[in-house]
Image (cartoon, rainbow, N blue to C red):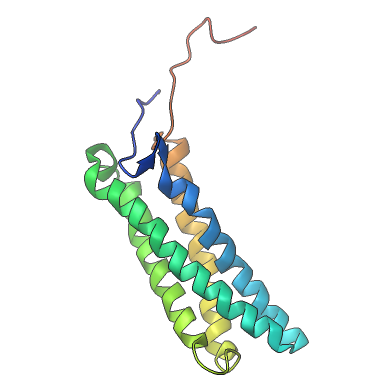
Length: 160
């Protein structure tokens, strides 16, 4: 069943900002788990410092991306009516809370002090939540056409 385009209100020249911005915090938070694991196995303080900066980037850029997503959720009626959008938004808020907590754990003179056990546990839980939240975000784009042009296929569009 074809869907009509659902336009984003948080867009720049017609391009929705949330799908553009979200890749950076996702990458930072996923690499944070790898930095934590590297610190545990190697013990080099570089990985603890890298984890601090990755946690900062994930939390701050995630909040910026979340603002764009929240604008769409609260101002576009067709998005607001989707249960998937609300589930995605609620999980994203939980994810941002974990990212901010993880960043605060690492704040201070010794970013390695809290990696075990709380830092790595929070990083692993964050990666699991990213998977579920990202899946729901993908559903919004690929199944509901949020922020993309969806064109109904006609017989002349289909080539034999």
